Image (cartoon, rainbow, N blue to C red):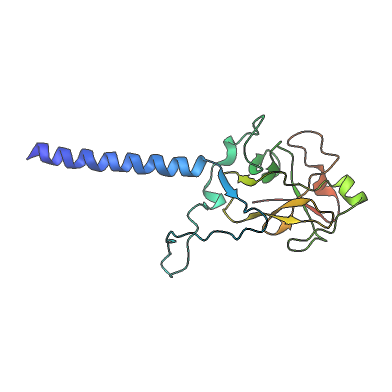
Length: 189
């Protein structure tokens, strides 16, 4: 009888360990959002989406920011993620690009629309998309990063619909001098 109880407990522990490992790898692995080729319709997912107690869809990839320990997040030399969260020593959690440069939003922009061209774009270079898929960091909710076509034909990356930019005066990863410029805000998760 004791061997039977031991086998059951051991089996449960193994299941818990495997579940924990899967949850850990899903949380700390960058997510890649494939962009459909131009003219191709997006494929619909055939999987069932989880629902919360009110029957609303649950985004299982999103973890509330206040539950995360971001004090150990560092800017690596290189990262696969086009956009990721960085824990700035003075500003808290901010969004940075693949090179670790601080990202900003512009108050005069609209949803999926930029109003920063010419001289403005020289001082505030748009965060452009140059590939076939967007890769986002682990602490960014799926579906919040997208791409739109600018008036000049380039494609700009957005966060929650707002176009993203760097600031020409920020020289190194972690610089965030653009926050003091009127109309410009550091992009935050």
